[in-house]
Image (cartoon, rainbow, N blue to C red; front, side, top):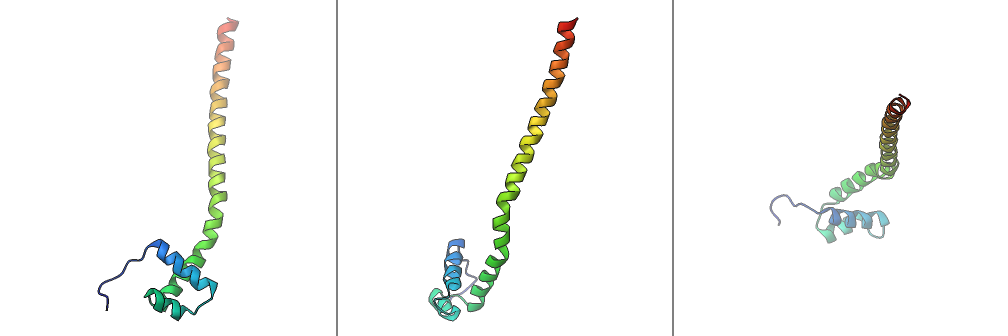
Length: 94
């Protein structure tokens, strides 16, 4: 029997959960083959299901943030150019 708490890699967890989601074999069979408790596999499946909506939503959120940063930078640059333009008009006009 193994002693201490085992730490599984993310790759291992993903592999086991994908096998469980396929449904080719019962969770008990997978648990026995991978030497983990069936409850652990069910917990990993639950974590995956809860995380899925966030995985698909991040791209849009990040894109919006990038666009917002670009817009802010462009507005700042427009403001600087307007100040410079008005200053040059005053210098040349005098």
